[in-house]
Image (cartoon, rainbow, N blue to C red; front, side, top):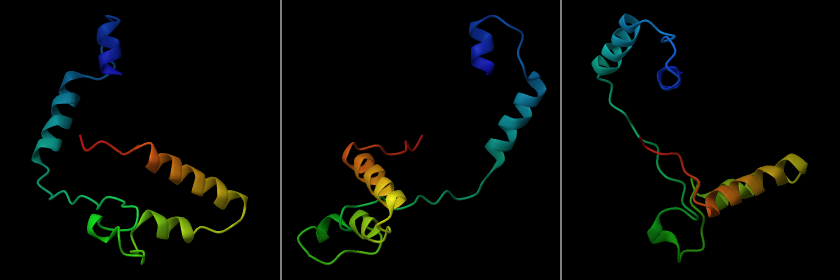
Length: 91
């Protein structure tokens, strides 16, 4: 919103002191960020030739979804998202 207001040359919707305070809070946050593991097709890349599915794999997740209409929808969404490479950016 701040950028949109700046482009349209409108007054800023947030006071500058609030923006500086929020930035300071973000900078002072020293918690360690732990990233989640990526979702692999069968598991780790080394496990592709192995027939067993790892618990955190896409195929194991898809197999655990029920066979009802909502399950079919969820399977389709997961499959399309994985095949299209739709992943959340790290930045």
